[in-house]
Length: 406
Image 1 (cartoon, rainbow, N blue to C red):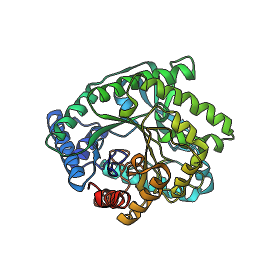
Image 2 (image 1 turned 45 degrees about the vertical axis):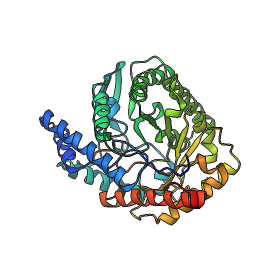
Image 3 (image 1 turned 135 degrees about the vertical axis):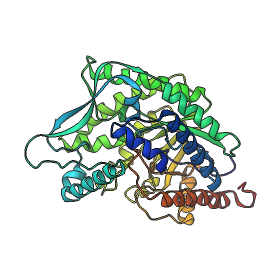
Image 4 (image 1 turned 180 degrees about the horizontal axis):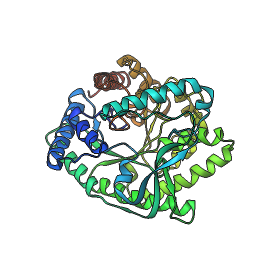
C-alpha cells in the first residue's frame, strides 16, 4: 500500500431498534423473527455505510448480530448449558490485582455498570446480598461441542448485502479466540487440553466459513493477556501463566490451520473495562506469545495511556517479515476525542521503527463488547472513528509526502 489504512477492533454500539429486540429476548418475551431480521439487516447496512462515509478503509458489520463478543459463541454451540452457580464474590469478572488494589472503585464500577445494563434491558438490577449465598451466570460444557452455523451464515449474507455499492478497501468479521471463551466451565471433556482443542475445532468451522466467504478473519483474544494478572493475583507464577497461554496459542493455531495468514487479524488487549489497569502485564513480557499466532495483522493497544509508551518495544523486538502492526491510536477507554494530529504522531513514530508499509491505524478495543455494554456515547464513538480516519490521512502525507494517495 502507498498509504496508512484505517480500521478498528470490531464492535460498534447497536442502534435502539436492535436493542429493543435484544431486551425482549433477555426478558424472555417472544420476538417477531421477521421484524428482527429486517432490523438487523438495516443496522448492518447503516453501520457499513457510515464507516465508509467517514473514511474507514477496512470495515466490519459492527457485530450487530451478536449478543456479545464472547457469549454469542455459546448461543451457537450445542453441548453448553447456562447455569446460575454460587460465587464467593457475586461477580462474574476474573480475579485481578487491579481489583485487589482498588476495591472501593470496583464496587462502584460494577454496581453502576450492572444498573446501566439492566436499565437498558428494561429490568431492575438484583441486589447482591451482603450475607448468604451469591450467584452468577456461568456456561457449563455438559456434552460434546457442536457448532450451528446458521446465525453465522445470516451474518455473512447480511454483510455481503451491506457492502454492495460501498467503497471500502477490505472487510473483516471478528470472532472469539479459544483463550477468550470465558465464563465457560468444562464438565464433559476428560482433560483441559481435550476441552480447549474441542473448542478450537468448533471455532475452526467459524473461522473457515468467514475466510471462504472472502472476508478477513479477526480473532479477538482479550483474555490471553489479561489472564497474566489473574494467575498472579491468585498466587500463581509467570510460568503457570505461560503454560496456560501456550496451550491456548497452540489451540488458536490449530483452529487457523490451512487458512491463509494474509487473511488473519489477531486482536489482543488488556481488558476493555474502564479502570486503573495498574497491573496490566508489560507488552514485552507477552509479545512472543502474541507473535506465535499465525496471522498477518496484529491489533494491539497503544492509545490507552497505560500502554502508549510500548511502541518502543519494537526497537528491540523484531517484527517478522510481511507482518503488519495495527496499533490502537484512538481508545474506547475515554470520552475524549483524540486530535487527528495525535493519531498521526502515534502512527508516524511507530512507522519510523517498523516501516511505513507495516503499520495501520486502529482502535484499542471495540466500543460495545456486549449489546447493552457501550464504552462511550454513540456520538463520541463516531467522532473518534472520524479522527482515526483523518489521522491516518495526515500520517500518510507525512510518510509519503506529495505523492501520498489519500
